[in-house]
Picture 1 (tube, helix red, strand yellow):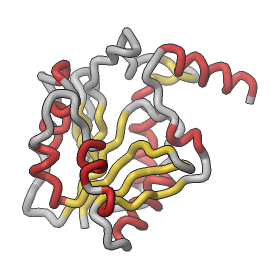
Picture 2 (cartoon, helix red, strand yellow):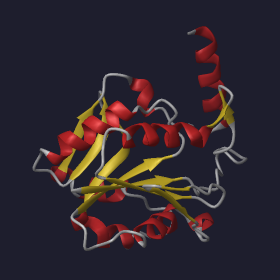
Picture 3 (cartoon, helix red, strand yellow):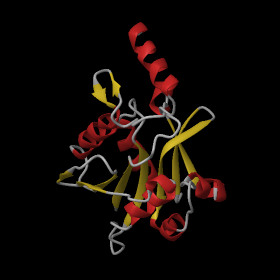
Picture 4 (cartoon, helix red, strand yellow):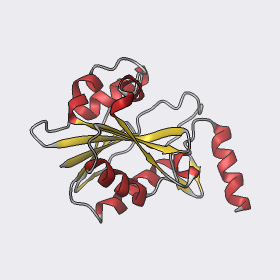
Length: 197
């Protein structure tokens, strides 16, 4: 079973008020945390293909390819479509959607999440800490058309909410892995936490 990991990095950062992906966190551009995590994951798995959707990042490596999403300013659904256009539907596959602003997400969590989902009978899987759900989310290929039909700022969560009985929640023990950075304040808060750790 191939897992297409779709790394969504084409957002407009409207809430952040500037280019979030290239903002520095601990001396490293934010988007690179997820890319480095995926490169680590590739050392342990040979069943992945990574699709990076971005208008400012260009990576063309073995198993990692970036594609532009010219309509991304209209909403996340356009970035999802841009990624789905590069999936080979003849493959036996599933799709994992990952966002580019979760600097603490580990390759070990991704690795276990994929394995656990593959051994389950569920068709959707979402990361969860206690009662808080977040990204990444995995969908079986059965949801390709519904994902492709999303409009404007609708994301995959709409489908998760539509089929709650189909969703397996992969629980993690470190809440930080779910942290995402939506606002400047979120970034400043994490920087402060790092100083006190």
